[in-house]
Amino acid sequence: MIVSFDQPLPDTALDQYLADIKRVMLDSGLVESAVASRHLPVPGEEAIPALVASAIVRFTVADTDTLAKAFTAPGLHEVIQGWQARHPYKVAWANHEVLA
Image (tube, rainbow, N blue to C red; front, side, top):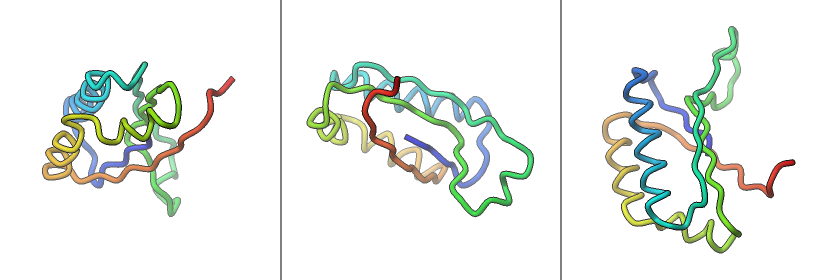
């Protein structure tokens, strides 16, 4: 999951968002692991007409059926709506097989 907030967030707010998303997904029992990392900015990237991430979150699930179920995890939409109301953001997905 590639997360891009419309405006820069204070570090504490981004940390809390990442913790909230990871918690709700792990609590669902559908996700085997959840890890997140902040985007590392590079000078000049703001000139690129593309989505620039605030952070990357990787969820590991058993299979594509479980992945589909994860989109309906209890509490997920409440977390998303709460954060979107305070700090709008966009998300891009990259579903893939395990990377070697």
